[in-house]
Each structure stands twice: as C-alpha cells, then as structure tokens.
Image (cartoon, rainbow, N blue to C red; front, side):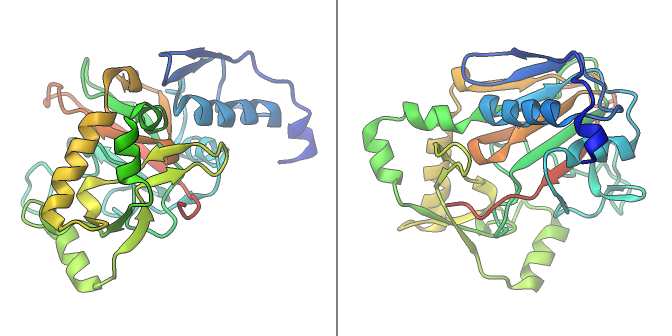
Length: 293
C-alpha cells in the first residue's frame, strides 16, 4: 500500500457482534473507496476474532472492486471449480442457482449443503472464504458457519483424547461420495490419480494458537485407524457434536453483503431453503493459506 493510502483517515466503521461465540456485522464503510492500513487491520482482526464477518452495504461494487476488497485479506487463489468464473476475473468463481449443465438442466455448482471447510485436498487450503451477494432470494438461502474453535473447547475430554493426533486423508471427492458426486469431478479425480493429502483432524490456528476441529467430510477418505465407511460415520457423529446452535450463525444475505469466513477455525454450509424460482447468485473468492498443523 502507498504511503498516501496509509495516511488516509479511517472511515466511520462500526463492528457489531452477532452472537457470543460467532459472527459480527460491519457497517459504515465503503469498499469502493481506498481503505487505510488501520481499517484493513481492524477488518482482518475481526474475521479472526469472530470467525465470520459480514460487511454490509456494498451492492454498488464492480467485479474489480470486489476482487480488490478480497485482496485486502491476502493473496487470492484459484477455486478448484473452474467451470463458472466472472468474465475477466479468473479468481472470482460464481455460485448461481440458474447455471445449466450440458443437458440444459439446472446444475449443482459449488454450494455445499453439508458442513465442511474448503479445499482440504490441497496442501495449502484457503485461510479465508469470501462470498459476495450479487442476487438473493426474498428469504432463505443462508450461509451457515460454525465456530469449530469454541466447539472444540466444549467437547468432553474423552472425545478430545480420541481425536488428538488423528489425521485425515483427503481427496477431491471421497470414495463414499463417488456414486453421488458430480460426474466431471469424479472423472477428474480418477484421471489425476493424485495421492491423498494428509492433514490433522484438530488444527492449530497459526495466528491465535487455538485448536479447532477441521475437516471436509465429503473429501475425507479415511481418519487414522478407520475404514472409509467408519470414517464417514465417525465424522457425521463429530459434526453433530460440534454444530450446536450456540456455536453457529446462519447469515441470510442482503444484496451487496460481503461475507468472510476464517476457514482455519470453522465449518460452513449452504442453505437451499428458498424459492428456487428466485435468483441466488454469489461471487466466491479464496485467500491462500498455510499448511495446516
């Protein structure tokens, strides 16, 4: 950032906490305007503290301005799903309920209705996932986020002992989902023959030192000492334990909302409880992260 930008006055920004354990809403800021270093740090720190942050009132942003807002939080990385991108902006993918597949049928693209964190099959999965609301239904279609850090702390000691040191083997799509997965994704995985990526089931946050349960059930082939079938049952039980209401926030979008999730301390899922005749279109950006430990 230039010296001139760093000297610019902080906008009249307010950050309001949503729930005790998760979520905050930002108002009083215009992301189309230059953002000074102090404001940018406050926003970054708020994502880490609250796990999910929503910056409201940004419906006027162009794709270039959306990308610039994303880049305030770090280096953007490519989405694994390259089928639907914003023209001229390959680092912004599109989640849209009006996408069509090759047969003219509505395509299920990107949005995942089960609890997960993104891109666990990669060596360096994203640290932040960002969703920008371009078009939203009248109600429903929320993105739900779970504070997996607070949920881990609340787990019984015997469960903590059980998962301590456990590893997950991650693929683009687990064998348990092969029969129901996107055919294009399944084909890509079979052709790639990439060995599984191994990550810890309990992840340490590189900035806070706190621990969180961290996995993508649909990409996990095995957990240490378990078969693929046992793994899926175990992760579902673990999901049920940590996604308690006090640790979760379901954000129903207003047009122009920019939602930012700290993937290193959370799980999230998409909601499909809305009138499908109405348009739901989100831009998605991912910030490159570090190797989990």
